[in-house]
Length: 417
Image (cartoon, rainbow, N blue to C red; front, side, top):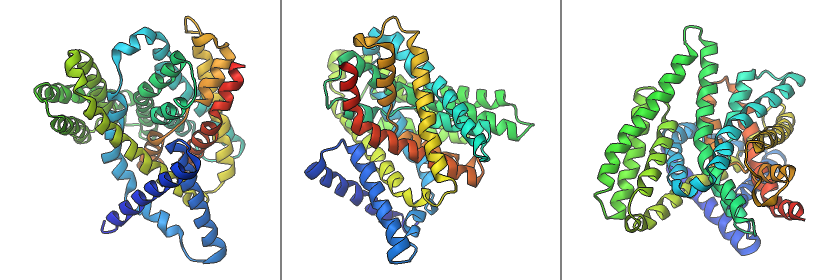
């Protein structure tokens, strides 16, 4: 643990220097810049390790894992990321497109995780890898949630129609919770399958119902305190207490902490929309603070994942896993978006059904939540299967953030023509 502070300093230095280089020379969105530059840095280190110095630079990345970064994410960072994503929702704004948002954030996310898992399982069977179908479905639930920060910052750079842009942003805000529920569902099924004495129904009811009760109860108490405070710093402290206490109680009662944090965020969003306009305006600094927390945690995760190219390249069947991941994503995301488009009253902004499917598929960028969920499987699946899940998550986050992010404007312009 003595090496934890130097590691934090190194990660912060990389985040800052990558952003400085990007702002001065490239002006990419910050997610693309962090992921791309960190991957290039990791690749250079790998080449130096193999061809120049012949020393174990791989230890640098090993430190990211031996310092129990998975525990740090699941027991600390993830709860704040989930609350930050869900607390920015504006329930009243969602009402005008409630059906479209509900279809894509709820139905498409779950269906997409199933589609992805099934297609990925076909690749696994074809190439003789040892992942089970439930492990493939767990992977599907990990990569199904899209990232609201990446989607918003990239889409705002060009003239996307307001309704379509709002739908993509709203879907990204809501589907974090749905992805976590799917993750808990498939993980519970996997654990129940390993232990015949454990009932999947009991696991899910305990995980889900317990988390909802704890999140709602803690939120009710904290929001009563929140309504009596005018100081935005005190409001932030109360909200952080609400999230961390909910997560801690879920750990004690063996419930799903991530779901409790999503409940806290949704309840906070609903509570704020019911306040007077004057009270809502006083939360500007509150939003800025939580946005900064979310951006910081996502930035650190992007850098860790980019540098982890050293770790990923040591994995068996890395090329097969990466190709299978990207292809499965197109089937999973594209198939779920296309199927769910039939549940809409109309396709927004006069897009064709196929064009709308392509836009939402190409605009479905992945981010920090996928990385955190993937790391959390280390204690669930065998070590070699954990490597496959991490490699697949790296591939999809890199491809969607860098390749899709950089070409999203061109795809959009092509569709509009």
